[in-house]
Image 1: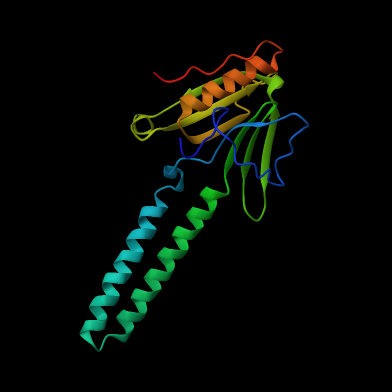
Image 2 (image 1 turned 90 degrees about the vertical axis):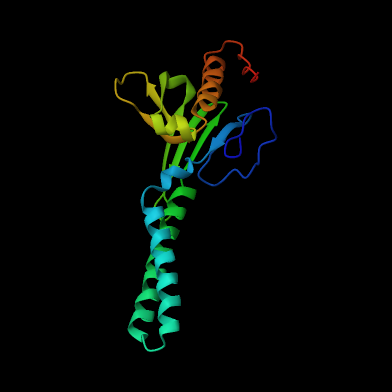
Length: 186
């Protein structure tokens, strides 16, 4: 469980500026999307960089191919920029479940934070594609009272079963009932 955390482990407490914890509220689960959320653009970016490196090596042995050398360095720069954009987008997306609220943060320059109190959550669902089951990611969807449409979706969540169990345990606690401890894996 490298990307998420729950009550069984000591959380890394950074309390970023976008996360507003009430007194007594604690982070019970935190994650960013699975690596696949970087999308198809990342393999394309890596391929551009590798092709640029091979082309640069070939053109430098040829001796008289300054235009090809320039093109190869341009391919490397474009591929590296594409990879960097994908990486920054991935690292700037965060999902947090606290003892009282749900948070979803996206964005670097302009920040979009969606926040719901747990007592407003009516229903949750998890979905995984075949590839998601194979690679260990899925979507966790939250529905709130008074709406038939999903209000919040944690896309490409690593270990969605664990995230769903943590959320379910917190929802039981938010209703005023005794918290149900998460079952330990066998």
